[in-house]
Image 1 (cartoon, rainbow, N blue to C red):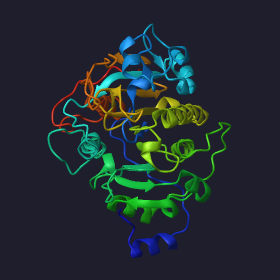
Image 2 (image 1 turned 60 degrees about the vertical axis):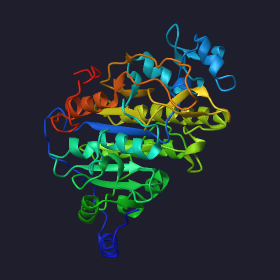
Image 3 (image 1 turned 60 degrees about the horizontal axis):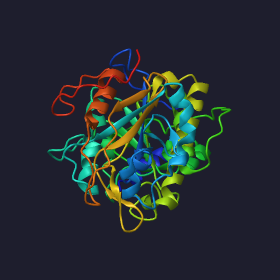
Image 4 (image 1 turned 120 degrees about the vertical axis):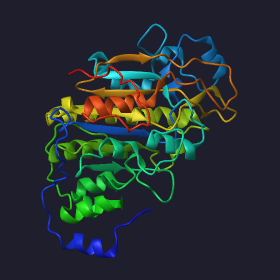
Length: 386
């Protein structure tokens, strides 16, 4: 894990607190103050128990102990519904501020964490790149920044996930509650790249308390959502905040990476996700930035439709993800992954390439030119209102 050098640390400690800057020049007026909140479902979420095919007989046959009971499903269509732990997202669905991207993923996924995390971070499934897709998308913004909470990669030597490279100043904070207490990024940083260290040397990232009526969950994800709101209030041109949903004990297997004991952990992880996102919406509305905020969940792959021998699920491919925000055209996109009779490891191929989502972010949200970002062109999804 990269650390701030002793020289930089002494410099940071010598700097007095200053207002949070993290400013970026405008590429286009439409994208200047637009924030992307990336929510990384660390380990690969089970889409079948998230967006539940409650009328599918095969779903209950292939998941004899972990399937969501039909009566418990929060029914949305005549065949699909939410896991009951996602109740906090239902009001967003009803307001048409929540889109479900069904069957999303990478066609060339390997279902192996180390390779597929590379694909997820770089949006390239043919070669290993030294730059993340966000760094490429924001590369023309010479002073752009990113703040990340919790895990940013699965390897010990963290290359800064989708922000890897030296174009984007990236600061990683593990503990949101520590940042809320100290209110200086420089005092809470656990990893930083060179542009991020240079940014902190100029400005330690101090910010005042934002008085909010919204009550945020007390778990790490909920507190990261509060940090996202307060950073959005303090730095209106900050383009991206990254938050990982992890286990409460720091073990991803106690969250959405559910190879075993899925009933013990998955529902709790989804509840924390939904309640945190609901609070994020409320807080962004308070500070007047919900229409300038786009939230997208992602992971490295989905899970198999087949329950395994340990009452969990192994790796798969196509899954379902959430996109929400004040300008989102809520509704269903793509098609639900079918419950196929496959080997316990594997799953149906995606019908929406994840790069279509990131193309939408790059072009329609940030106003960037998508040429060269993803190697070839992908059609944007019709997700956003003008």
